Length: 230
Ligand SMILES: O=C[C@H](O)[C@H](O)[C@H](O)COP(=O)(O)O
Image (cartoon, rainbow, N blue to C red; front, side, top):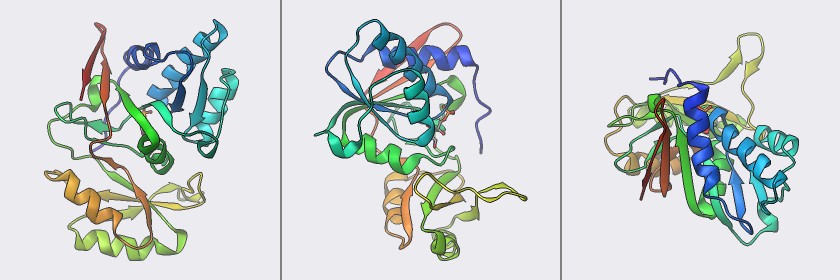
């Protein structure tokens, strides 16, 4: 089930709350999507006012925006680690911080950056929160593997379709040159075991279930922002 998406003001409040936690000297993971973009813009303004950070972008889009905002950038292989990664989510359970990402097909690099980070601050609007995850899970696959992976997802009780840009444009190709299978599982009562099952399918590069990655979640609303830490 897809989220309808909140307002830009809600997303901005969430993004700015996470950006406010950034201090000089930090290596910061720069997430992908419309909500993380607000954090990147806020960080760009702070850099202009003297904040001394370097960013590690999670996608082509995040990199382009960070360059636009004049945030100094480095590659993941140029740093010892990341102090804080800020990123959005397609759906999140506030009790646990477990979430689903990859609506923009950036989840593989997002998970890589999150795994290298001491902290992952997820920023969302209120339409993204739910009690039990049931959103489409994006699965990045090696190009030759999409039918084999779709069959394996069927065996796990899911239903996978190849993500297409449009009938005319053909399949979505990730920043890494791979394809994406979108998998529907309905209600995901055991995200940790599904995450393990998906990760062990040959041909899967990475999936969008983020279990026990988030250390903070900020939800921007019309009234303000509320932050939960884990
Ligand atoms: O692949 C995309 C990412 O996981 C995004 O962080 C996620 O889709 C949320 O994006 P948005 O803030 O635009 O809803």
